[in-house]
Length: 279
Ligand code: MG
Ligand code: MG
Image (cartoon, rainbow, N blue to C red):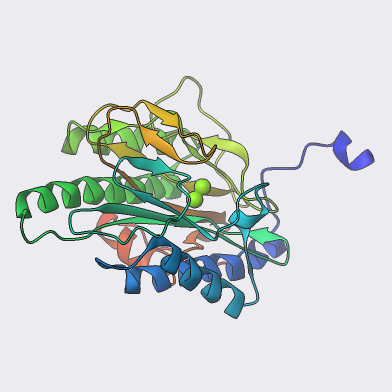
């Protein structure tokens, strides 16, 4: 019982940060495997199998399967489904907007990441372009949040930066029902990572902090409901949404995106941030 008497620190040691590299890279590999195969005609269940194989090839376990009652490696959020959607055997179609979310556990440490793509619809290029813009703004909101983490003294500056970017680029809404989180020995830990301004500064940003930054942006309203399957979350107004997520470590020499094979270098370069490998 003694171990429950002390709240686990949100700051990892340098040795613990090093242990988070492998699950981060396995998570990246799983998402890359799905992304390479994602096109009209493939089913979310087929993408799920590719992601699972990529994680197991690296000696990891899909951590979504550790959530009681969830049997898959990925969540595959198609169109009005926004998060936690169970992969189905419905083939993807032109004009679908698809967010794939996955995570890996290795040696008791976790990674978590997500991306969005649009299956192009040659018959409706305007719709395709509009959905691609929603995904672009969401991805860039994530990178602006990560760049802010590199400069911040307190964590809630990340949400300020995400919201400022979204509102400067669009009239999109930022979901408030789902936010980012600390990550380490479990997939979801303290502290919460808001995607919008909140009262209070949040915890100090200093070496050892590891967070999943994951804005979810909607083209219409931001209200959601959970389907009868107990998992799939759907937009109340049936509108489109996009989700991007990376797991990011703060260490003594800077930041490193654990779930990007380049540590986030390509995404952060335009924002003037150079990630540094964990020493
Ligand atoms: Mg995730
Ligand atoms: Mg997450």
